Figure 1 (spheres, helix red, strand yellow):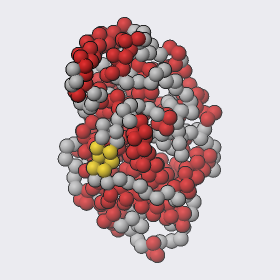
Figure 2 (figure 1 turned 180 degrees about the horizontal axis):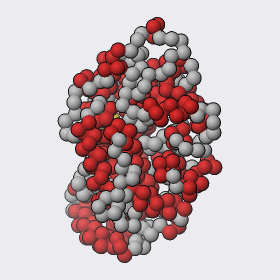
Figure 3 (figure 1 turned 180 degrees about the vertical axis):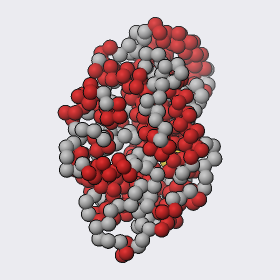
Figure 4 (figure 1 turned 90 degrees about the vertical axis):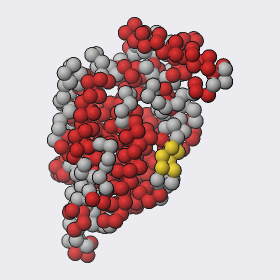
Length: 439
């Protein structure tokens, strides 16, 4: 049973669910799990096997006006020394120059040596992939049409993963020839999405573009100053990121649960990529408010607990996007929200501590789906898995704690993950072992 602290929410929502069933019986179509301010549309974004496992401001500036000047003045390849180093990233979205230098300096030391090889293997594999963007990214609800949902998001996710691996490979490969090969192929993926995709539709379209597509923006930042990416192509991609991508982030960033967390990450990444400091500051403040309002006094995320059997997964899903947005804020503006405590005492550390407790003790999860009719009524509004979804080190939230143990220096978190290095995540934080700044 769901514990008494949330019972008032259940009672209130069950009354609505009964009304929903009555409408359905009368032939009313308004009872479907559609998106809206009331959040039932969040039911259309379930975790699936792929999601759970690691694998390889309101007006944005014109993208063409926001390009770093350095990018437009790079020397031709013929004028560059054979062993020239990679050009620095644009703004240091998820990887600053200093962080990349650290990776290079430790490339022959464990665990970075193994993690770098993991990345370079992915980059080599990505060379053989052909970009596959649709003109309209239409993503049906995951609980309504699981197969259609998976097919649509995998087209985006595989392209975005490939672009990111290649772009990071450009920064870290050990020969100029290989770096240029990786960067040129990464640009091919970015160019394809910028020129082909122009619309996002479907119940899960906006959310999927955020969590499966944000790595396209990470990739663009890493090759922003690559002299083999023509200025016109760079401008086309930043235009796409500040229109199509940004619009999807804007449409969901104010929602209370994980949708809002992912929308905030997308808005932060889009604004930072084009140097919109005012919007970065706006999204940074939105994160402060999210920390204060979405985290309970005990560190739990009440909006995610509503997902009962899937609540642990959705808690991870919300935290992984929020922490990535916080990393971008730190990298591009120097604002540290990892150590921020809201006036009401809420903090990311509080939420991560609670999440880690359940990672170690999932049998103590207090919000299973109620049995019988009560549970079926609840699941109409907040769909979930049939059984309580269990966390793991190698699935979720292991990769999140690999990188967060580096941020916070918590020995228990590190000890939980260290035997499974090199680790790779699946949402926002991808090359987590490689990104560490401590052993």
